[in-house]
Image (tube, rainbow, N blue to C red; front, side):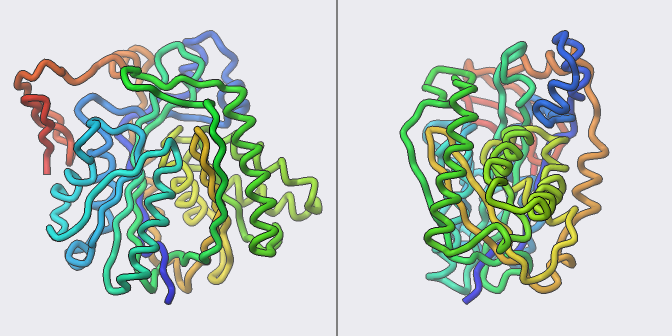
Length: 383
């Protein structure tokens, strides 16, 4: 039985910051951001929108009435949860009117949560082939104004519908994993922003990839030539490139050029959005599908990394006529129609927070699934 991603979509808010503007405001050479990090724009979110807004918006684009009847699980991968107890998946389940006899829950492990959710979805459909699972990777990456991580912020969500006989991609059941207990990136309770050891984080990311790549070759008997493209978790787009180039010594120059060309296509969207944490790998996958001329039957390798650290490498095979089920124009329109904010507008939006005093407040954001009221610290959303 073939199981895989039947549909995929993503959503980002209506605002962005140009990285040249940020560089100039922070008295830094813009090349440091555009070339050194590989980022051109950063998605920004107002206080009246959150991971539920993002996740529900991404999923609403792909779900039909029949899908909602067939979904048995809604799994949200995130490290930006707004509640230590209540799952964002339950609220998204309600907002999307998915049939009530379904499991809805969150998975958390830094940026790896979306992959853990996707693999659990595959296992469920394998045991229940006539049912479907909705996987949502949704996050808001914030490090603080004037912080070292400020240019690697971002936000957004990717939604994937997992089912048998998928239209887009099929799992190859070839996952390999790697875990290492390190503190490269962490956010203890009570901290608004993550704590980061930047140098260690970069090194662990690359080391995890090279180790898991060698394990993949050993377990699955594959080489770089077996993959039409390799996609990566993208905290910033230069990071994935460093990992890719770490295995270049084993390839011919032609092979290096081929994989780097596919990598360029896979980072087009991320350069305009920034860091999605759990969704970064899958935004890259969406970008690859939309911007590459890949053929049915070709294999794509995916490297997922979550600080702390857990990583996974697996592959998926493109289905026949997969191009017919993409939303290229809609995705490009979503990015192009956004409003560019000034530095002052960005800093004002960044500083705004929802009240937490338990009183009742109403808001006038007309965006679908935006927060329209908060009362007794309960968030209420547009439908």
